[in-house]
Length: 156
Image 1 (cartoon, rainbow, N blue to C red):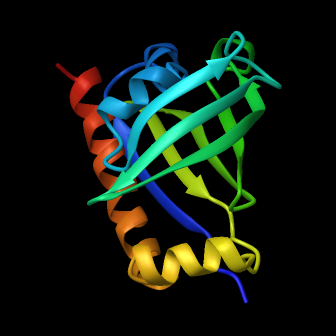
Image 2 (tube, rainbow, N blue to C red):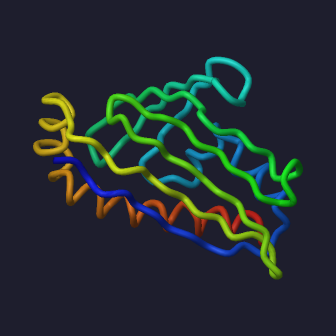
């Protein structure tokens, strides 16, 4: 059995174009996300671009690999934007969706449901991350911290 999807949202008093500029700067995400240490993109950011990410939780460090699966600049759709990337080895999609509001932009961060993990991912979650449920609780809190940091950066 896998893990359920996770979702967090925040309204930011900034136009979708400004929010998109910040969200689509994937290398800067390390400054907002509590688990991400660094991102290396293998090509220009956009649909199909691949990335290597270094993650950390306390003393545990591990790589993940991604491919951008959605890249929709809000300028092309009345302020609605989307960025998503498929992550291995966990086989999940992380995404950011932007929706214009009267006061700025609603940003929603999601992690898709995680299918049943293989033996390596299961062992890592159980022994190094405190279990999948505990790590999901940390990830959800981290999503809120990431969105709060994004809001703080854009509302200065």
